[in-house]
Image 1 (cartoon, rainbow, N blue to C red):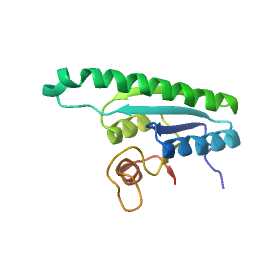
Image 2: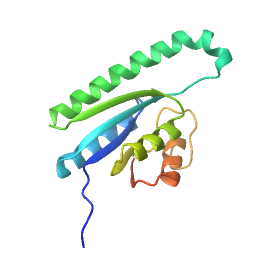
Image 3: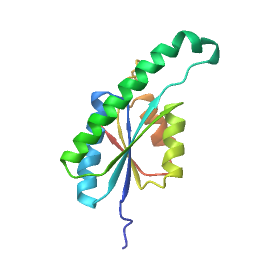
Length: 142
């Protein structure tokens, strides 16, 4: 039986401890398969009528995201893994799905819960949506 080799891994990140667990598992998998990792940090968008009031907050979130991605790149480099970072604005579920298909990733490695205040029974809302909607294999890390 011929198995598809894993060469490109997508790891959605949001700054939470669970997303770091997902990154660590992605690093482990990448080392086993000589794969590269793309980290995706999605900053949620807000309605246009609140843009003026929220703009300083979005600037703060962007700086925070870039710092987190820099730390993730360092973490990967220490293990000898090539890490590409991408920070975007949008809906996390939509952006993860779109990038996974456009980038032709072999697997998505995602933490079970992120920074969302909503506590679901077993999975976070984003991880749950990705598991059910993705056409790419998904590894959920608890």
